[in-house]
Image (cartoon, rainbow, N blue to C red):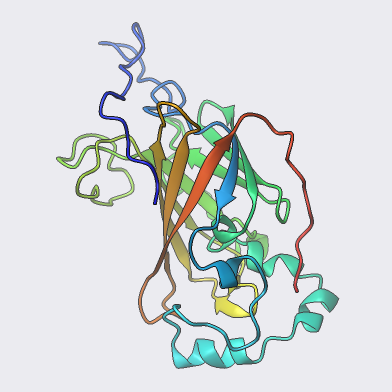
Length: 260
């Protein structure tokens, strides 16, 4: 269980001189209520047998698959994926945060937060809204889809609402506007588990990143992931994954995607 958030850890105040009357609002980087940058390692405290190794064919317990999806999963052939050069199907956005992996999180610019994984060597770009680009502009064509899709991020507003509801999603009960919310679409079809449990091109992923600073130890964050797929899932598949901050990148060990 993740450590409790310190009561005295108040959200930082907006920088003076930014976003004042008549001036532009602060950028997402400047307005960040918490800091996710740095090096992190996944702590596999649940679902160990599905996350630390590739499960056998037909093991899709705890995932609300429909009959069509179970038929696809039962036909999984790792040799076929290897021959097709699709070793990364189990490292796509709906599944990558469940991998036993290390993360490097950094800002690319004032509107783009980057997450790199050493497992599978994946890169996620979380795009905050830019004033000059209309929301939802330039969707990717089917042939241009990637394993990590297109991710739109925002700092989650307080539960009473307020500004920043551009994604049209209601804030979660109990939040204090300190969480990172990410919605990912346009994902190349792949696997929810590496043993062929499928998700389709219609899948969407909603994630909430919650930071838990420790007064006398490393920080933690928990990402709650909700995968919706009208093609293969009877209902949303919801998981939580835990990460602990590391002092540096000395244990960073990039490894390519593996099918087996």
